[in-house]
Length: 124
Image 1 (cartoon, rainbow, N blue to C red):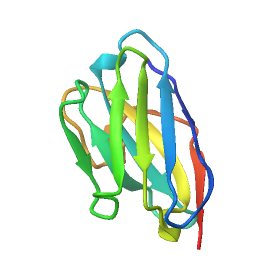
Image 2 (image 1 turned 30 degrees about the vertical axis):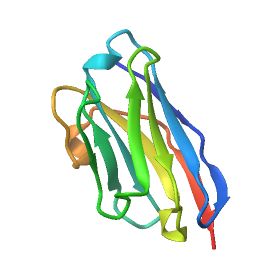
Image 3 (image 1 turned 120 degrees about the horizontal axis):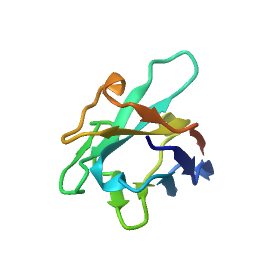
């Protein structure tokens, strides 16, 4: 089992940057596929980015491709989401998700563990 704690959210102007972090407990972090999702009130949870357990493969939603970068440090049990060129439509609560498996998925139901979320607000 793993516990996930997100940090790094905040208020930023359009065009700015933020770096989200997700710290995971446990000694087998390197066996977990990791992902970021986001959600705004009244909307479905939306896939943002995923990274395989070795970090060798990443995948992005079209809406963030070229602006966001997902990375992980298995020695520090941490996954990051670097967000550049932020837009007001990126405003959401961002969640970290994990599954002890190879591969990845854009579907939230595939992931077994979730953090509590961190708010990102982009002002115009």
